[in-house]
Image (cartoon, rainbow, N blue to C red; front, side, top):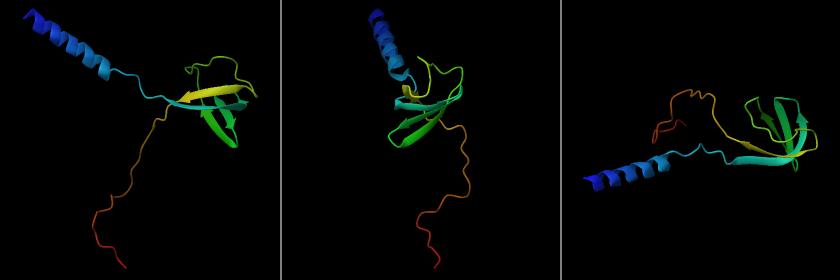
Length: 96
């Protein structure tokens, strides 16, 4: 009985570690700061310019100033989704 409880306990601990992972956040952008004004950051890499919004909860290491090289780690998260119309039916004849 004692052995069975130990095995069950180990299985539960392993399952907890398997399902308890941090959210996916492996997106990043590295480039040179073109503009930084306290809640908005423009970073250029090559010919591309990306805008990032940030707030007081964003961890900032170092000083954000024009010309500094930065790496921005970010997550893509939908804030709202609106679907309109009915989905197209498969196999429905089209009018000509």
